[in-house]
Amino acid sequence: MNALVYIVLSAVQQLGVIGHTVLQDSQPATGESNLSDQLKEHASEVGETLNQSEAIQNVSAGILEPIYQIGEYMTFSSFYWVAFSLMIAGVVCYAGQLFLAKFFLLFKGSLNIREIILDSFSLLVSAVGLVLVTQIATNHSTFTNHSVSVISSTAVGVIVGFVFYWWGQKTEFRAVDAGSKKLES
Image 1 (cartoon, rainbow, N blue to C red):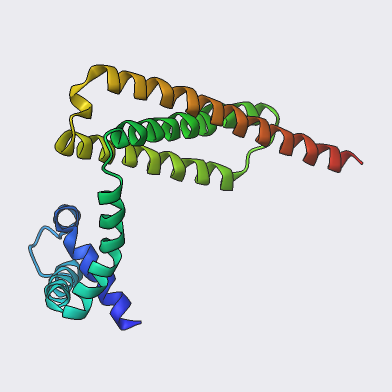
Image 2: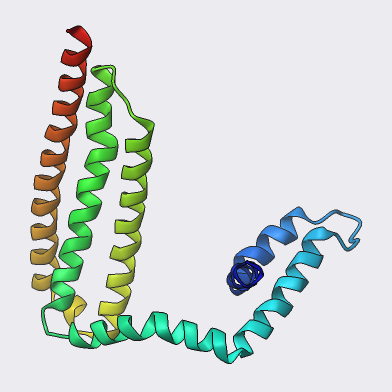
């Protein structure tokens, strides 16, 4: 358990820019050392120690190696087109689910907070994936240099995303209708 705490603290330390900003904003005006400073210093020490640990490096390599292998396997010419299209589809689908479908369900008097959280998380994952795919494609391919590729991938992604949004919305509405019929009987 202690190792897990140290790993989490190390990860937090690696996010030093964010942590530094948050800690700076929350420091008392007197400049006295506080608990936040102590935690930051301890996390930094733990992070440095863990980064030097061969066992931690092996665990990190074990996590990253299969991902790298898949990445090398997936370097076919249309990979970025497909990945970009999938991420656009996810953004369109979950934005529709989160904003339109939930809006319509509000009029039916049925909102499920778990569905809202799930759709929000899915939208966030898709949006982050879209940004990462775009960055990687820019750095490692010519995909972003070809306007027709970007536009066609976007168009396919929007269409697929809308189809999945429509499908999900229908499923949610059927579930609401089935639940209300069950309550009536």
